[in-house]
Image (cartoon, rainbow, N blue to C red):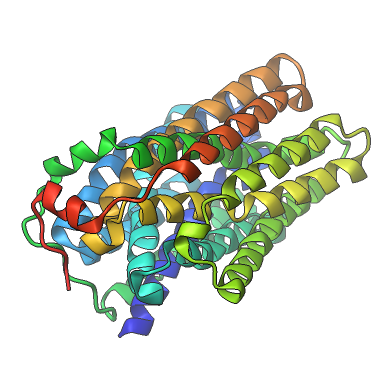
Length: 403
């Protein structure tokens, strides 16, 4: 049963990667159907991110209260159904509604992956390593989505292609009924976790994710447009968008191997995120200043490789410093920081879309450089925040850890 439980956490991350990549993957096909420009398309992405931001605030604490299984069921049913709805849209308002509603399924999938996985992998003792392993599957979902679009769109058309993607997301619901789940903590009250919002690991972990999620969502949504600006065809642009997600997967695999191989303790892993942030500043600058398609592709792939471990490291370090795994409140802590992160995913793509519509996509990406610098600063502060005492956290919330 434990193997099915681990597979379910992987499936949650895979579903989230698929959902977050789908709007970027179908942009060049959906935008003409709806008759909209980059600024309006940016609002579709922002609608998904905004609903996700609101939904995750409820879903994480709710999971800690009622358990993993109900949230996982909703994850795959809601996500598949919303993708099927998105496949049939004929006007912009319906597309906005489908994108927004998709955020509920996305967050159920996200909480399933990012709180269940670190609880069952490595005995719950190395959340950053667990997050890197889990998020390989996020990257896999994000890569396969544009790959499927590129292979099927010309032959099957928009509606059938997106419907197939919805079916893929729906299938893992079978794993829910084969899994054995950890118990929820005794005495847990959803309202009590609000006190965590004032703690430094939630504040700085969340603000660092604000920067990172905004960057990743923007790249996933506009890389195809950026590469089109280098005189590539739609097929070529989608191919290299897939390359971006492959590079992101490789970054997470490499980080997993290095973390496992070096045996770095969780307390020693915090400097990794700010170091990667510095490298991300350089790779995004390469994209902004690229004069040729080859240079643009190189910058895109390097950015994906560098981005890969940043999200898992930020989430894992925050989960370690907040003692959320030991206290049985992994869903709540993840929800708070990810909600702040999704605010970045809501605002930055909208801003880049507006700037792109007013000038060029490469000019608008200068904003991403500034955000990457802020990521370096905030993740550096998170590094310096001392870890919490698990006993103090459980006493503060008046709960007994699940055995």
